[in-house]
Image 1 (cartoon, rainbow, N blue to C red):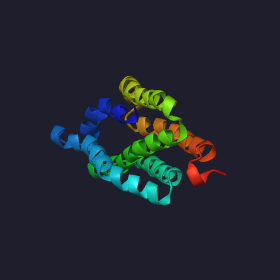
Image 2: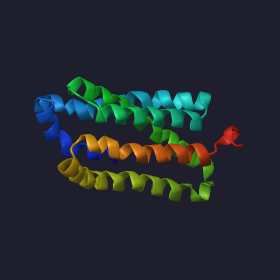
Image 3: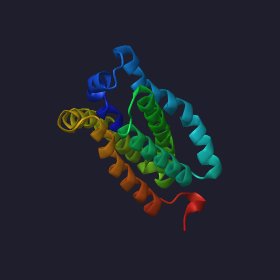
Image 4: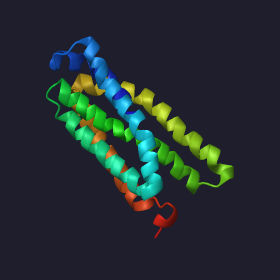
Length: 168
């Protein structure tokens, strides 16, 4: 997962941005707090304006957060970028809802299981890949690597995902 890729960079954040170890916890906490706050809001917005539309908006905001993360120049700019990235966490319940809408009940458990397993598997892979990227290319490369993946996901959702009355 993209979020675990940041963990190996914590010592680099501390050194390059001259922050304390205690303050570095905000780099992770900002993402989690914003995700927790935005999840019910995004859910309600997706009910009102459409799941696909809100999912794409959230994914776009996430990509902006990645760009800002790669450009971070001090502690506040990095924490702000991470908070913006945290908005992206609110896309997962919407994605689960789309899966629930798209799959028949007899295949729903399998679809949700596959989606859930990619999240946990991605967390492990992200940690390993993150360490390699930080070591070889620096912490900014983590955000830059995730951006094209998120943009491809955006294009796939925009082109191929249809939900309810949004179908054409």
